[in-house]
Figure 1 (tube, rainbow, N blue to C red):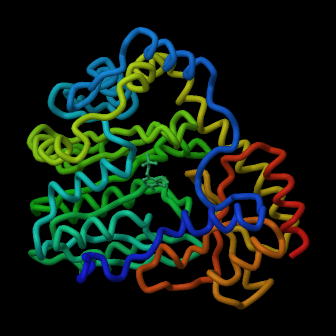
Figure 2: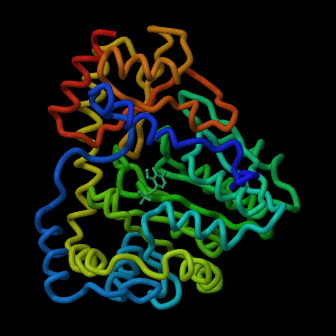
Length: 380
Ligand code: PMP
C-alpha cells in the first residue's frame, strides 16, 4: 500500500482528461497537441526498411551515432553551435524524458528552480520529486511577457535552474532578443543552469528568429536544450527526442538516462537519421504551420472569442470573457459537451489555478477539421 504519496497535489494531466472527454462526447479534439493527418510515407518507409534490415536490437545508450551526427550538423547550421555527437548529444524517449532526466540530474534537495507560468505541466512534478522547490512567476495575457525585474527578485543563493520554453506552450509566445539580454545578465557569474524546452523550435512565424540557447555562448554553456521529433515530423506517438548539453552536464544526464531507459527504439532512430538529411522537412515547417495558423485565426475571427497573439507553436489561445464568465475548466467542459469542440483550459498550467478565462486550441489539424470546429464555435 502506498501510504504516503510523493506527489500529493498531482492529479491526472489535463491532456488525458480533455482527450478522454473529447472521445466520450464525440467532440472535435483540439485539446491535446497532436496532428490528425498522416506523416510523410517516405519516413514510414525508412522505418520499415530499418526494421527489415535488422535494426531491431538495442541502440547505443546515447543514441544511434548517425542520428547524433545529423543533429550536430543541423544545430551547427541553424544556431552556429558545435555539439560533439559523442559526448554532448543524447537521444531520448521524447522531450518529456529529456526534461525529466535533466531535472533529475541537476536538482538536489532544497534547490530552487524558476518556472514561468502558465507552464507545461511536466516540469514541476519532476522538480518536487527531486526535493527541489518550484519558484514560479506568473505571466499574464495577452502578451505573457517575462518581467525580468521580478525574476531578479526571485534569485537566491539556492537558485539552481531556470526553465524556459520558446516557442511556448500554451501561450504561443517566443523569447525575443531583449529577453535573451536580460537572461544573460542575470545568469552571468552565477551558478545557475538553464533547461530550455525548445520542442517547437521550428514552429515559429512571421519570419521571427528562434532564439535557441545554442546561439549564445554564455547561455549555451549552462543549458540543457530539449527537442522533440514528435513535433518535427508530425509523429508525437513515436516518442523520440533529444537533449543537447556541454559534456560535463551531459555526463551527469547520461548517468540517469542509462538507468531510466538505457536507450530508445532503434529502427526509428535509423530512419530519422536518413530523413534528417532532407533539410526541407524541417525548414518547411514554419510555412506549413503559419498557413494553418492564419486560416484558423481567420475562422475564429468570425466567433465571439478574443484572439490572443500567436508567434509560434501550434496552439491558438482565446479569451472568452465576451461570451461567459464561468471558470475556464467548466467552460472547456461545456464547450466540449454542448458545442462539440475540446480545448485546454489554460488555468491548468498555473500552479494556483489562476484563471484569465482563456482556452487553448491546437491547430495541427486538417483544414476540414479546423473548418468544422470553427463552424461549431460560431454558435457560441
Ligand atoms: N515540452 C512542451 C512544451 C510540449 O508541448 C511537449 C509536448 N506536448 C513536450 C515538451 C514533450 O514532448 P514529447 O512529446 O516529445 O515528449
